[in-house]
Structures are given as structure tokens and as C-alpha cells.
Image (tube, rainbow, N blue to C red; front, side):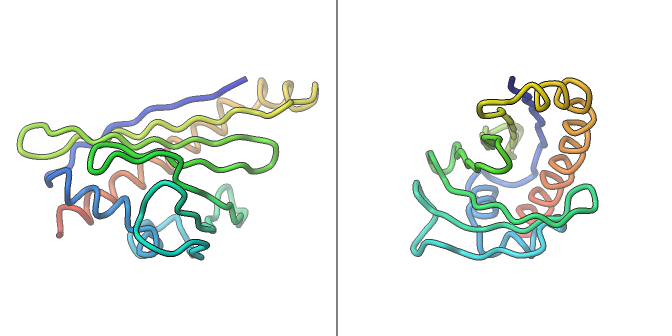
Length: 152
């Protein structure tokens, strides 16, 4: 049982500037108001295998999730993964040149790993509400990424 959503934000900046923002994990708490803190778990530049812990407040609850880069093709795309609470989360950013700027597309997916009957019922009942709240948070993230890239 997978839930997926896709959002696109046009950014009045080059793909390289947008890439600089999305690949700046240590600076993301300063860019994205939804992130409270970042703790890097790996060293070196952004790339496959880069790991960190990200603390956010969602639905009034603070949660820390370990995340890692599973794929990267600078400055065109990157995929970030996380496992949390019995779910496998995937976030993919795709950057495309358009009208002197960049279309930044974010695809977010959540898949339950070995869901129990109770989990399946809960997702059926509350999955749309949760995804709606997630879309709102992701839309805000995209707007803040755009604002940062446009200011570079």
C-alpha cells in the first residue's frame, strides 16, 4: 500500500543554483522553516551515501528521522530515502530548465513495510488526511527552496 504525491515549483534561478540549495543538507535547517535541526552522520560533499538526522515538527509532534541519499545526478535529480515507523519513505527531486529558470519537481512516496491489518485500516481511513498535510508541508518546502535559490 503506497501513497505518492508530486508537486512542481517554478524557480527563477538556474538548475545549478537550485541544486546548491537542495544539496546543502547542513544548511537546510536555515532554509526550510519546517526543519528544526540537522545532525550530519557522514562527512564530505553531498552524494550517494550522505546520511543525516533531520528533526521536524509535523502535526504538532517533533520527530527525528535518519535520512540518506540513495541516488544523485547533479544538477538534474536526487533521491532521498528514510525508514521510520514501519514505513519506507522516498523523496525525489527533479530539476528541468524552463523559461530561463528551473522547474523543481518533488515526488514523495510512503510505503508501509509488512503492514498489519490495523495499519492497513488506519491508512485507508487516515491516509488521505496525512497525505494532504504532507502535501502542504512539501509545498512550503518547495517555496522556501525557490526563495533561497532566487536569492543566490
